Image (cartoon, rainbow, N blue to C red; front, side, top):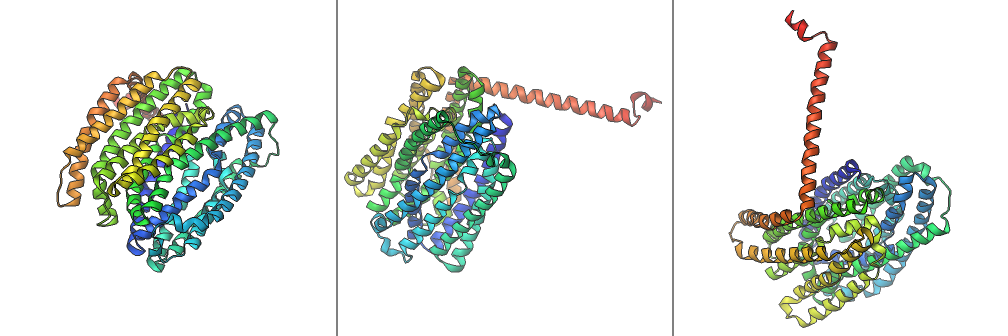
Length: 535
């Protein structure tokens, strides 16, 4: 496995992600302060709707990088170029589909945004601007995927992150100067246009020899690509229906004001998850290359290592999230925006359960086994929507939001956490997943029990910062117990940690030895030998 590229990709993503999280929180604070919480909710609704429309992307991005792994490893530039040409055409078609679908959904906006009359901005104009910014991104998506396929995710991360940083700065200025949601969205378009220009320049300079090759795919390769694209399309539908349906249902049935408060909580947890996911997603191409070059047993051992890391990271950070989230919302966005503790509890549990899929999804995408569970996301999405609507109608009014989130939890536990590991173990590792199921559900139950214990251990203070600090420390202390249990139960994790320390020790020893040799050589070159010094 190319550890150097993996470390560079992860480190670059982490640095920029931290910067963007801070900037996005500042932008959200400015939205609430200058144009209101209702516009904050409306902006969240637009993002959710466009995520639904992006189902037209068909998961082409993941299919591209997977299909390119083998020809890149084999040095087959012609095949890589043929794949690239195909994906350019697909992305242009996708952009057109999203444009048409976006225009078609506009008449339904007043029904999706309950209480939209409280905002002064034009629904159709502002949604149209958001739609344009999404469509533009598809004009350079193929080049982004080409760069990522060569394991240079850090390059696309730098380009997109700098573009988003510029966007945040422009949006803050627009909010202060114009106090306009329209001007806010125009800044998004400007930033995405600049990302397009920079990506175009880099791709042509670095991979011009690939882009300029004129070669078409043979029939077998085209069939393989089509199969993978169809499979990722199914996954895209399920992911969209699960991850965006909650916000749309809350907006349509409860109101954009509540959605605004809810989105403050999910913005923080989503930002945290996006950072934590960077320990996994930038490694997709690296794991993909490793799987091509290594045995199934070696890949399985790596997977068990990543799964334990997945649990350790999730336990510490999600317990910490629950302990401090109410204080964070007050400190970052202002008072009177807190949700009931029951809502923050189910939000925490829901996102932890989803986060525990990271290691399986990493290896699924890297090994191409996403084809075999292509029908799973359809059932997942439909069940989630049906349960969400049912629960929002039958739960008492004060628990409407809880009902929507509980529906997502049930969907994940009954479908995702059963089907995804089964497919991965059967088709990638060639073994049964029974031991994984036992461990996985025990870990989820253990986290839920610890979360309940944390709920009764938290303290209250008048000072928000003191309360945040104390409860955060309590969460970390409680997290030690499940983390130690998980480490002791996984011999592969202990094995790789020992090997990592051994490698580090050898590296330090070599450095010290090399440094001593260099010093000795330098003294000899200058005539400063031990004998010379004695004379």
